Amino acid sequence: MTEVLFLADFSVIKPDPGLIFWTSLIFLLVWFTLGRMAFGPIQNALKRREQDIQNSLDEARKARQEMANLKAENEELLKKAQEERVAILREAKEAKNSIIEEARKQAKEEYRRIVTDAKEDIENQRMAMIVDLKNQLGLISIDIAEKILHKQLKGDKEQEQFVKSLVDEIKLN
Amino acid sequence: MKVDLKKLSILVFALFFSSGMLSAQGHGQEHSSGDASHEEQDSHGPEAGHDSDLAHSYCGGHEEDGEYNPVNTVMDHIADANEFHVWKGVHLPLPVILYAPDHGWTTGLSSMFDHGHKAVDGYVLNHGRVNRVADPFFPKGEVHIDGILRRTETVEKDGKAEEKDVYYACLEGELYKLDKPSTVDGGFLGGGITSFYDFSITKNVFGMIIASLLLIWLFTSVARGYKKNEGKAPSGVQSFMEVFFVFIRDEVTKPMIGEKHYERFQPFIMTLFFFIMFINLLGLVPFFPGGANITGNLAVTLTLAVFTFIVTNINGKKDYWEHIFWMPGIPAWVKIILTPVEVLSLFIKPFSLMIRLFANISAGHIIILSLIGLVFLFGNNGQNVGGAAGGAIIGGLFTAFMNLIELLVALLQAFIFAILSASYIGAAVEEHEHHHEGAH
Image (cartoon, rainbow over all chains, first blue to last red; front, side, top):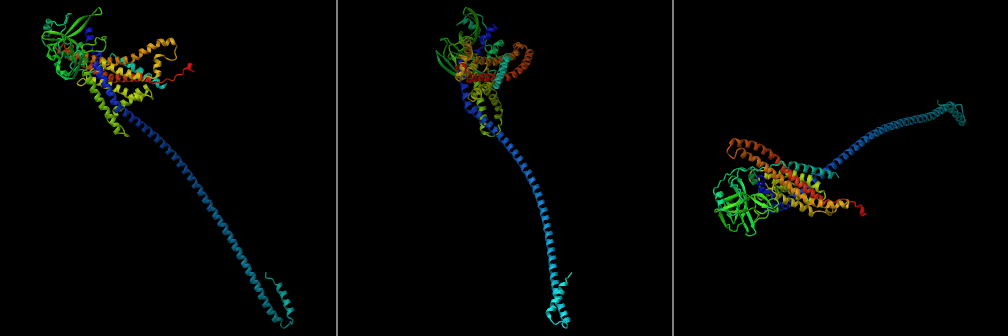
């Protein structure tokens, strides 16, 4: 009898048209309301946000990549600059040395030239002095000789010839 | 291929759990199980109709506390009702909308029936449910009735004697047979079309409305959060519900329906999931306005399953119908066997959805109500206080445990309903890449 009672009163397995009607109505209302007001907008917002996040990540990765590139470039540049500095320093050193060397050489040459010139000058002046001296001496000698020979020699020509030959023989040094 | 494997594993998991849980469900409906308040006097006689002697002997006194009958109590509590029992003696009246083909529409509040003590236009409240006296001699308008009488009668049906509960209204010493509301099971499940239809806002409809309003309020505020916090991190209830939303999207709609079509069906699957989940959870609340056995009512799960059936089949692609009616790539004689099977499976799929949800939630309600009923059984219907205390301790512990399982079941069954619906829709919209060798 319990089983019969159970079946008789087990009303939940007997679908009531009223409940079917209301369930359909409520479900449709919820479906359209939520689809229009919530699930659609939420899905779009989530998609947009996911897109945003993906974009941000991509951008960050790109930025990181660029930064790394930049850093590498900087390092390269720095290395190059250092190398250049070294090169410039070396060149400067070389230039300095060469300039000094050149200067020294020039100075030496100048010095030599000056010395030579001085020597020449001295020589020239000495020669001039000697010539002058010779001439003076000649004149003096002539004067002396004239004075000596004035009395002995009559003819000047012969006398002068004679004295000149004598003077030529006297070479200084 | 990878997606298919994942799909399969989720399905297997879902089916495994749903079948494993079928016999162990609980639904928290704990209010006043001992309230077998209306007269229930069994009579064993084949008599029917206007029997004055019987009416005098059975409808005379109003005994509010009849013998505790655990089966009837449980069945009354899981049944739909036209009034919402808040606690003993306090009922929330619900609108009744009734239609009888020979009388027309009757509307009002269920309080007009005075809990079965008044008849209005031939309608009375029998155990919280509106019944109708089909007898044309029953007076119209408001009349006071003496009570409701239940008798178990033997009915001849197809040459076999069947015992059946029949209810009578007692009025001025006369017995009037009561008709239950029409049901659309065609008599297979003990119901059938009777003399009237009940389109009332019943306890189940009321519960559904509460759950729906809650759902709409919650999700519109979540959607507002997305508008307000655009470009910002989610906050508050928005981030709480987002977990569920993203879970259903990534584990149910996307893998089951496929990247190409899923967005079109997402609102339907989401609505199914959250609607069922909210109703299930509301059913777990042991006090007003919870506790209604809504998804444990076949009418509700039938409706939901029919929605899945309709959405699936109106979106069926050419490939889908071809696979049902003339499966490509197999010998013709196999096709002849396979086609009826495939056609049957069209209907078996939503049928299984309907039964699974119904059985899980109903069984849960029955188990919890039975455990609470231990208090009255051990207490010997109020005679044995010690026994009642023992029953309360044992029943309370088991009920607490069952409620925890029910919490899981409420979520799981909603998930299973959603994922299976999604997989059926996915199969309908799938486009196969076949190479018909014969055609080239």
